[in-house]
Length: 100
Image 1: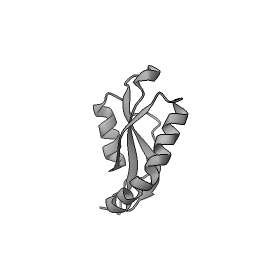
Image 2: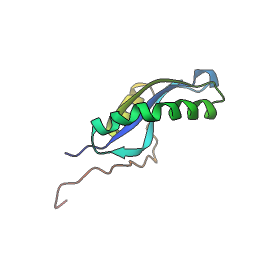
Image 3: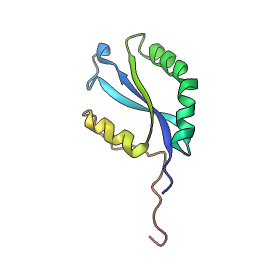
Image 4: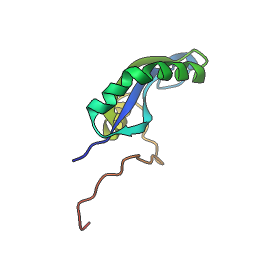
């Protein structure tokens, strides 16, 4: 099974009064394997930190930057008590077996 990986960021926005205050944000760019994804973390981390500071006026905090698949991203957010959005459009469509 081919998995697609995304740079995924754990953020804390407690100072903005958002609940739950901690959640994973998934990047837009897909990578074909985990190694390729992880090589990009050091290059993108400064931009990720800058963008979060801009978006939260300095009140948000990046706790962790890792690579994970979409199913992992959803599962980790559910563990943090986030609802799965009903209109969630997965970036990577599950491959259906031939003939279904």
